[in-house]
Image (cartoon, helix red, strand yellow):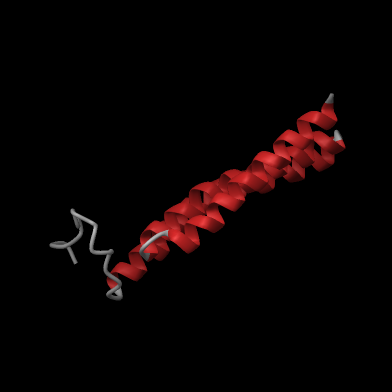
Length: 107
């Protein structure tokens, strides 16, 4: 039974990582690409780490996997925000289809 759960978690993780990779290729600008990779990539890696914790069923492995998951969940949004802000301040503009630029008058 746990094997099926591990297979399902790994398959879902690979699916979300694949979606993140497609997002990097298909999205029109830097900000959309960062959104695709930070959301789907974090979810994909998180599901794979949970699968590792379920597969080994040891407290030490589960603690390491879940602490790595917590680190990724805490740092990925902060890193994406910092990179997006640095890109905006250095002059990288959103794509032509972006209707609202909420930072236009602030920097």
